[in-house]
Length: 404
Image (cartoon, rainbow, N blue to C red; front, side, top):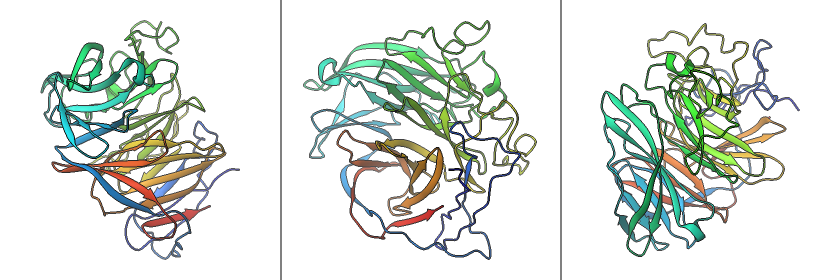
């Protein structure tokens, strides 16, 4: 089934517009034209009727945290939370919080700090976690990935090993930094373009890329540019602006990412090896000056299309989580500017519904995760960020939905 564009507003007056994608626009990697959400209400359109379905109520688990960035789950029901300021917090199942010692020094300027974490699938046996953080100076900073063991009894990190360090960028902004693990021993990392654009198309640096390494720090021989002269062997995909969400679907073997556009043009992408995702040659947003991105057409031969995008205002997607579902792809996206939790449902590769939860109720949402039992959690942004558990009920409250 081919889909038509989805249009949902992020304001109280919800309206919809449905239009077939332009025949000039190529399909996304899933075989559908990219779906579109209009983030301001078009005039003269009919209202969307709220659909039946589960509501979400929030339950505070822990906090406040100082600018939290990511949450991870440990087998005993406790949590790990990274803070931009360079602290790693261990949160007990009852919400009590303890600081973990041994975290390396991080560069906290601008978007820098201790960014993401990933818990090894075999943590119960090896006690291993991975985390990303920025190091260096303001005019020459690098994203680093470290592997360490968590000594919970002594509340410290041990056996630290740096697995990866990116090429240096000229400013500590638009740095990416999201991690994802695959069950076959690979680690993926997003890296932003540092506000420079053009380097995202240059394979000799790591800016505007998603990279893949082994969880032992090795460079896989099957990486798409492993043997290309002049290219960074760790690169998995390129042409990204600032990917802020990353998750691996183990059952389907798929890597998914969301990324910020400039003014509009935020994207959800299925990441394929060796593919060019177009930035800054194409995009559906406009530059901060008001000029279109590239030639303004949003497509060019040889460049990948997003699965879904948001215009004309940015929702500023952050975390991304994939919900196990045998029939459909269900993707949760936390948002900063939108202050909402988005759920996209994809059937046969096409967006068939978009739902918004908790809009403006918790503030800016920095991360969304699903624990092994299927429970949703969100982490709010700011100097007093909170960790919330989301409970699913029934009804229409807190939800806006469109169907195609």
